[in-house]
Image 1 (tube, rainbow, N blue to C red):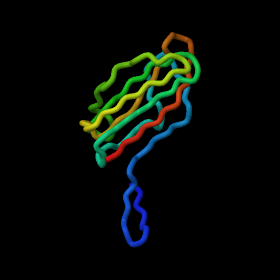
Image 2 (cartoon, helix red, strand yellow):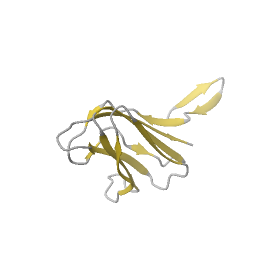
Image 3 (cartoon, one colour):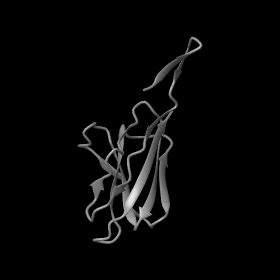
Image 4 (tube, rainbow, N blue to C red):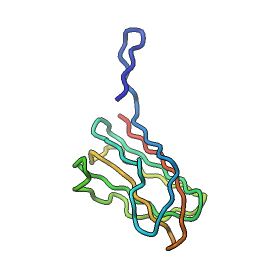
Length: 121
């Protein structure tokens, strides 16, 4: 959490944001590194994925344990075509932790995607 002191007033950051580097998909569903959001301080969560090359499948997972040992798929693997984007959002985040996993749309065809995740009050 970021806190700034401005003119003797405390102001809290309005969002938590994750913007991992572009990552390549593989045939198996794998974690998109850097996509994790700790939503315990926030009410809403939103992810947007932008696919750069070849199609990619993406899935959203939620958990209440910080090690994701109790994770469940909130959005099953969904296809996103090359040069397209897709979003997921929830206004009252029911889970404490969120993350994204990706996989190639077509076996052997590596896709590349970027992701932006935001949690806010």
